[in-house]
Image (tube, rainbow, N blue to C red):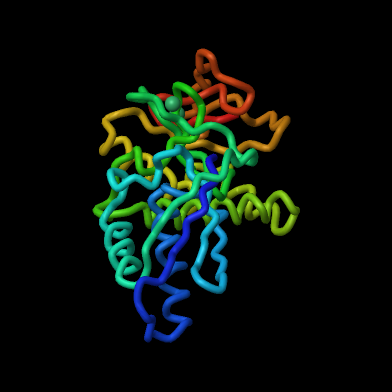
Amino acid sequence: MHCVKMTMTPTTLIDEPQEEIHELLYDYLHVLYRNGQIYRDYELVKTDIAYCAFVTLPERDSLDDKYAGFFVRDYTQRVNKWFALSFEYIGENLGYGEPCVCENPSWYYLNAQVNDCSPVVCGDCRRRRPLYRLPYIMGYDEFYPLRGWQHSYFSMDTIWFHGVSDRFSYRQMRDPNSSLSKEGRELCGAFEKATGKPFYYFLFYNYGSRKNKLCPICGKPWQKIEGGDDDVNKRCEDCRLIAE
Ligand SMILES: [Zn+2]
Ligand SMILES: [Zn+2]
């Protein structure tokens, strides 16, 4: 939630077509976003002498090399071929809450009702865990499948919220065996394997739903979570589901 101005100043005469340079800079920002080092609200601006990007970081040091993965390093190198990168701290972005910086969270859950930042929530502090603080999964060197699923989920949530195709969209989020939920639960399973910590899947229920007494997979009553807030307060440990 820190706002930083990145400046990319040309260090050499650029003989590539402008569109390719713009594409490179957008790709660079996008891989930073995919790795969780910046949020999705980035803006790229061209000035007379340089390019600037206004980016939001979860932590003040989120752009540090120690958090970079293969793609971020690769794109940083490509950008460095043409530009000198510099960073200026602007201030706090008030549109976001604090991220999770717990030393070693004891459990997590996946909830993609947000589109800009991390879909992974720390069970201990209930804050969003920056993705670069999590291991990569499913054999990828980045969070490509997670981000893809996150955008599908968020789109489904938007469709449901605006009442378009609401039976279909609600079922996708409500049914643990819908294609959307299955993919989400696979991601949780992969994270659980990689982190060694319980990793739950958030199951959406419409407010006031009376059918939300039992776990929809095993049929046993939900277990109340100690210290749970209004948003998520019950879970099924066997099926790794969490609900509101
Ligand atoms: Zn935490
Ligand atoms: Zn269950």
